[in-house]
Length: 88
Length: 418
Image (cartoon, rainbow over all chains, first blue to last red; front, side, top):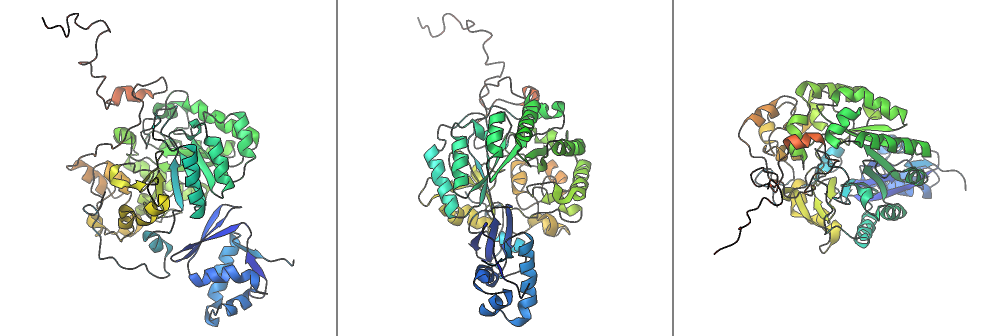
């Protein structure tokens, strides 16, 4: 995942919450929870960077946490909160 | 209203950073994630266990314009979907207009109905509409069991609605079942009905709220049936919806899928037909009344700042339950179930699976008086038969002592003072 381009799905809205954000996919009607404000920023910026790794670096996520972020992002990919970005 | 006397709170610690989601939920969210909106108290049926004591329309019911303003605010607050109920919501002449308005404003709708108005035409409209879920109420897998509590003809009404939805190509309707002593043995039959109509089964807990208080003793599942229900839910996992309403059963063993927490005022609330906001759909009572959305600041102000909701979001102590080994799994159970059976809010749930509720029920308790009742003042042919044997009229009008034998039985010289 680290070296691939991803983005927030078009059908997803993020609602800020004290712990992070709530993500709702209007398409499959699934609700997900982003439990850290840092993760919310990463998810919002995925589309602005060439791949996941550069997003994590740009957001200042320490290298030792990258594996945990990839796990969290994979979970969000499973409910289509984020999806692989195809070339436009 | 205040709950402090009943729900002792510890010195308020701050919201933790990170950690389990359920801990975050205890401190409340910026907007609800499960909002129930009862659009009307009017209903064509007179179900014995109606949570909202519905029947007659309230003259103060929100107007179409007021409802649209509520939807606008829900959109601003990013409440992504609402559960609409009643009463029978489709009785409102503007129901379909409000449904379309909500969907157009990014507020998805799931509505509960007894099916009376789900005609082939409406079913076709629903099948062609995104972001709408339909939930048909059915409290028995046979007419005998269903109509006993929901009234004559209501089983056929629900099945006809399911047939119409299926024929129109509406996929994944929900069949919503309130679990009772009479229908726990029919769980497999309910599942078969759901499968037959391409629907999803949703099982919820019977609450002693509204008219439910009058029949709870007779209808609520027996202890061994609770075990049967729990085992059935564990076996069927995520295939069956529960509205997270059975977290009190978690003390049997592993927790059930979903949120094992009382969400009242934290992630859940109810808007009633006149705009009153209550902590949860099962708690339409002054004690759980947070405010009215027609006051300044609207719904958002009530949600964020009402005294009641702030209290519910402060950490609760387990009271009599805190020494129980299972407190962490059931969290003391359902606040509304305790309140409406007259049990202390910081003690066991009346249906505590360890039996502490049963012993609490035998002690001294006072069942709180209802603070609203929109039941029809005169029963119609739709009234379930069981009620004629059980219910006291709130106005006392059917006491035989006060009922005249006939209209002309009054004394001809009444009121005459020579």
